[in-house]
Length: 355
Image (tube, rainbow, N blue to C red; front, side, top):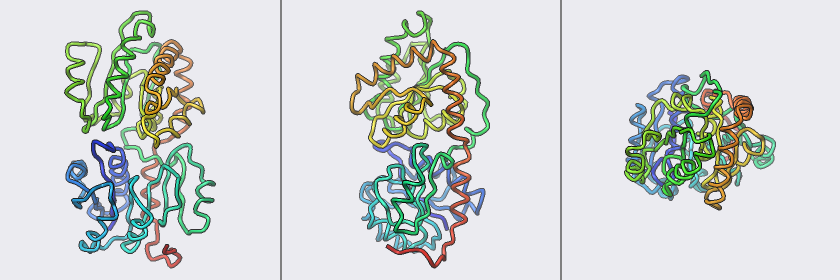
């Protein structure tokens, strides 16, 4: 049995859960789909899992207090072989306790601790394998590091994208939760500066609104009657929508890799500490435009965003360079690689170091 422990809600967004569902789909190609079981803290998370036709058990606990769920694992008495955990709320005690139920793998994109797990995955482009090996040098933890492991859905693999002569459609995406309505703030700023972006010619704006966005009704009222602005909720064909756009504005996270896999030129920003390294990295490497850290300097980030939008809208060569750099960063085969690593793990290995 393969158990995947992840949550998604308005506070943390759906990113953790969605990337685990992507891995689960790839895992189902390597093993029996019925052997994959999700553990979620609440019914809201479980609803997303059921939509993807995977079995799920609702723990009925607080997703922020993972140690409190450990007695439930014992009560369930599920025969597991591998446990994949994806949460920022794990503790050493929690992970150590999980190892009595099977091989434990952690999805980690912070690199702040040497967790007591059998394997760790950090798929970020900025992650360095050597740094992880040094971090886990006293342990037998396997390290799978780098953009080769980015778990993208099949719709983002093998798509053809062409950089157009002019920018007509701009995509805006800020994540599933967006409790601060950053999407609304960005929209106001770019519409305000539209006359400087394209010699007065109108642009179209496509706002992606996640399932957990608490400002949905407010945004609907804002865009009502404006033919330039399109609201997209719970998008199924995300790759198709991205391909129809000439430029994107995105928060850090998996969306950065989705856009990069397609080659859509974008400007990115962070709105939380866990997004800072990725957004800064793609800007520093010239892969895409970097507008700054919204959570530290909202107005400064919005102003930089305006400046970068003008540059990208008026310079096709810059967009082509962005396209080429993005495609070189990620190839879209990460979920399959992770699934193969998971199924290849020797559950009965005698060299598992219990910590």
